[in-house]
Image (cartoon, rainbow, N blue to C red; front, side, top):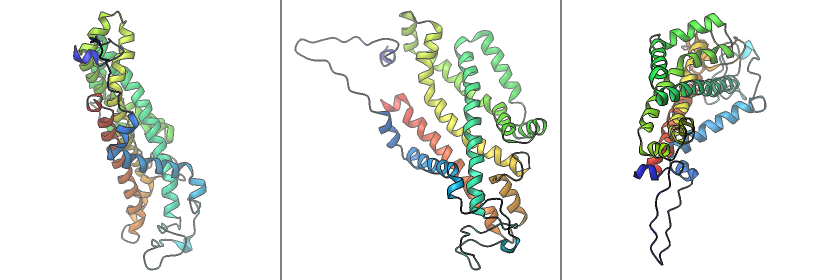
Length: 309
């Protein structure tokens, strides 16, 4: 029953008082200290916060209009290369549009899809996973069969098919990612819920009269939350990749909206004449996905209740 005693919601540990000796318990470490002590959380989180600020403040910090064309200034190299023009830090594309400004505005699309799609997929998948892992029986059987059927379809092809049916646009991209990736959350949360349901603190909660719903929401869910938070961060990186793929094939937002995938598709055609048009969005895509992955791993370690003890 040592683990049951460590959960204050389920049962309180018995304290044997000795005359003249005051019982004291070590104060739990603040959560922020565990987060700051994890280098991946600090580095990756700082990068993503900076990227989010850049995306939010894009109209004020972007040096130029991302849609402004000037064929007289097409294919200008970056500022450090020979033949560069002042004011074009990362050069221009074949239509004379500023690459840096298009990168900044492209971050808005990438982060919007990442946050909204990952959150909605987590809500749907985690809810079904909790219900399946806790109630078992028919509920678990129905959810598990649904997950098996859903995962039989190739995810990228299914996302392209869904966007083609629904129609291009940001809502369609988000819906496609949610429909595909909810199974990832469902499987992980279901397995974690089953593991937590077999722990002693759940037995203690039943013994003192907690209802099944109360045990699920007050006892199991808080212990599943660290895994869920880490998984959401990883899913954000996947959502950024999926949006870039859909933009690359022209099935994301309209062509007049800058996206990293659209810039990659454009830069691929002129890579031998202007390598920077392809290198800039590829670098941003790589760094952003890497940051989301590292943040997820760092959060999992920092929020792990066993590691925090």
